[in-house]
Image (cartoon, rainbow, N blue to C red; front, side):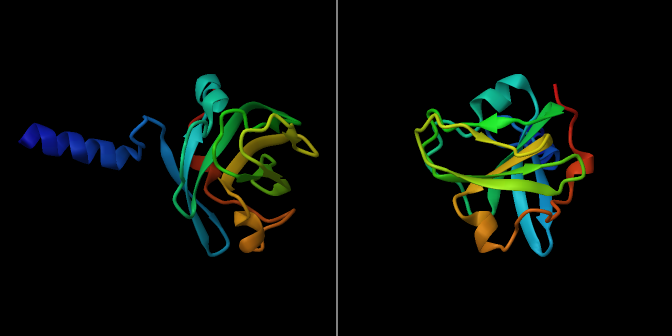
Length: 144
């Protein structure tokens, strides 16, 4: 029993989702986000594919190994999403609205280090637009 409790404690303190992705707390002003972290080629490639739902104020943060005009698409993604592309300081470059199961490219308008995917309309509903800061990025694992 002690081993089971220790394992539960360990997984809880590591901040991992059931599928093994690390989770981090981010903030934008008074708004908090629990974001799964996609920092490897494999996790960035899979993203939120095949997910049927996502809790409010939850999302996925993509960490890219280079600063570039990254693009996202919605192949095999069942949820409508909004994506904010962020510079190295965590400032929003632009926000794109993305429809499920499409292969349209949604790209950063300038070089970006991160992309934060949230449920559709989240950024607009919170009043977060170009220039707004997303905080909590300094404690993230390095991209691979």
